Image (cartoon, rainbow, N blue to C red; front, side, top):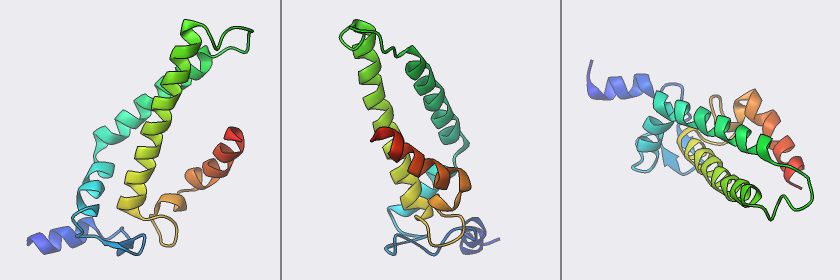
Length: 123
């Protein structure tokens, strides 16, 4: 099988463009496609989600907790988790596209339901 035929086989479930700018062979999009399809990337993100759950469970509404060492550490960890989750979303949106075609980022039902609920929780 030739390289172009192999590339077409791998990219058949991708939208032709991402954000109306980046084709499947674009120098920015191509490595991101490989990254988000890499199994270790998913395992890393699952580990980050688990660690985020642990830090959320450590949080307390008791008076003085936000000023304690554990409170400060959980707040700093939450900032790091937000940065990691934003980077993941950016990579997946650039690699897969956003919403208009099949297999794009928000076409996954779990993400489509999670995004508005996340916005409501933060506000």
